[in-house]
Length: 111
Image 1 (cartoon, one colour):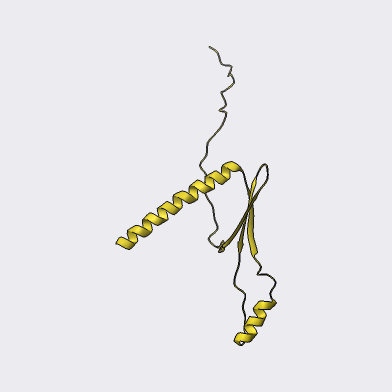
Image 2 (cartoon, rainbow, N blue to C red):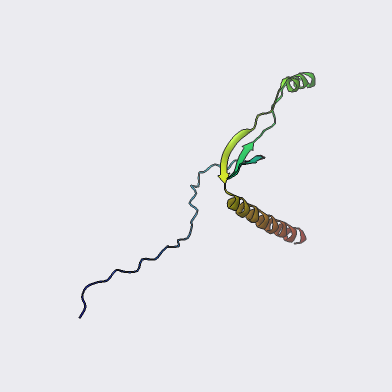
């Protein structure tokens, strides 16, 4: 009887599901400005938010305040580096979600 244990086969990989874990108190920001750049390896996505400036006073005073501005700032919410493959995945996901949104909207409108 052979009692000596041989080497067990070790799998090359193990697949586990990805589970999104997001704290309930995580703030949701409105991203309304987007900037995409790329180099030879990555795409760089910047997401920002712009709010219209506040002007107070008479119409003439508000006009002068607006004229004095040299720019309207965009507050950067996040910057992300994505591979070409990740950009394609994001594009496909957004296309799918837009289709789902449009279909749901059509169904809601027709009752």
